[in-house]
Image 1 (cartoon, one colour):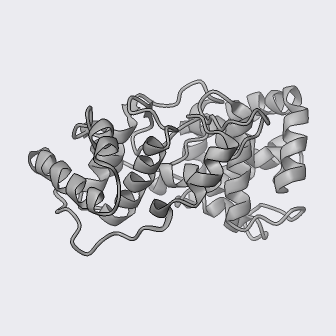
Image 2 (image 1 turned 180 degrees about the vertical axis):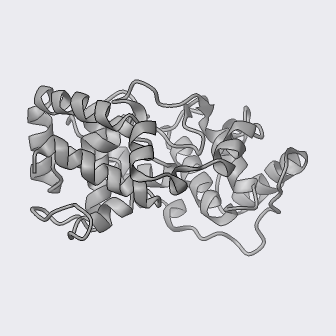
Length: 272
């Protein structure tokens, strides 16, 4: 995903950023049978809100009901794991050992990010390592299918309908390929941003005038720092449980054990 600075400024002010979910939204469902009809109903609804038919036809050309997305959504078990279990499952010690090397090898990048956003390297590296193994695996699910499936699914319709409108915004501006692949819930890039977070917090970390969360670790890490700042990160304050910046970490993931892992791994990497 790539974006020019001028394009980003235009995108940030676009109508779809704040568009609420309509009361007469397309009817949700709990299985694949109703998905094709929902797609057509949603496209009519979206066109009525100002999304061009050309964008809709292009975006939905290869969209399908994505069963792996539903399995992942129903099978989230991180909330139930103990801290030690979670650390083992996510390879926490490997993230720490590799993360220390990543911090050293990218010292200038992390220093620049901390100067700009106030976020130190540790929690960024913790997120980067746990989400994608430092960019080594970013998922194989068709992004637009994943987001569309969850917008159609009755469990979290409103939340993912908003994500779908954000994805359409990105497609319309040319910043999201209709063939893009990522994680099961539609997350994109090296630290796994949902479409709305790409719109709201995407940042040009390498200064090349583009935003590329897949190909540029600088952009992905700067965007993650911008996300944490946008969720209340206070420069110079601690980020362990009970400290001021732990609340910003909590904005990243709803699972408390995940939040604790970010804080712990970050502390081991930062040496604080």
